[in-house]
Length: 390
Image (cartoon, rainbow, N blue to C red; front, side):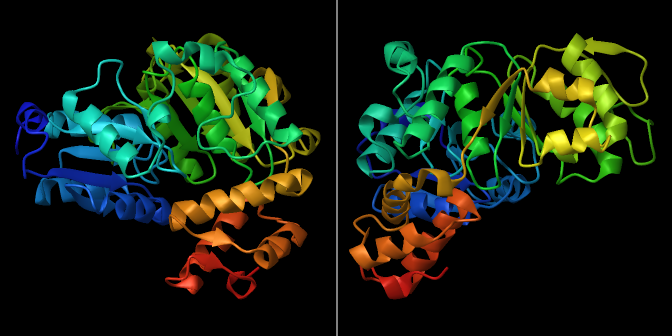
């Protein structure tokens, strides 16, 4: 594998940079690859951490554009494996939905900077917004009128979300992000981390609904060798892996009641105890929680601990459903159309259809509708009424 130094010093040579896009979001992967296709990057893609690791062994990649919302591997664990096995590879974290570069070290390698410049030239992200939060951007990030990375909309409801998110991001306060499915809770969580003093530390995500109950405790807290059948070696949990950074407990309403007391201990005391061990480990992790469930209802049904609820919901952020800020439908649709096919646009009739829909699936549903329209439109840059399938 060519070294970073050699590649960085050869900025105008014919030598190509191997770029691997890693995300479960197929639309985002395709959009990034399409925009980078004319560059001198050699492009490949993977939909999971495991697939990415396999590709790394089979082909030469110098830079990974990494979506932190991997379905199979926690990003910190994935990064650690890469650094161990492929120490020369540079990782650039990108937004899960837009592909916009989000996070790099304060002193990025020449190659990382070069790839960011390529992304800018290809229109993936405006040159002025290549990263979030650098010393030169402090005043911008203090501006309550500024939006959030990856989020589109200028309605009063969304400006309120931006303002409270920026207000709480610099604090250490525990945050509960609430809203219907598809409203962008994950983007708000990412923004809180990226606008916080912990931005250069890990951002770990665990989906409490996606991991079987029997495995969730081990995933959260880790285990020691021999703790259970199959535990052939000790492993730290995702809480410990987020040391110094931020942990997002997604779909917290799905956490089994039996685990909630152990989670409460961690949230209150900052300690974790691995399965099979009596040792407690102090950890410094900021906790964010997200849910589309009615936690008040779960409290009344004794399905969620009241003490844990109030400990997690110190600062609640409620995201409005799309039907409550319908004025953002047009800019959101335009943003998705441009992302899927630069230069495309929606005509008036197509926009009218979108604005009359109630959007039970919220922004995620709108994104899917625009992606379908992009496929149906073929090479036509104009998205018409017949391309809109609801």
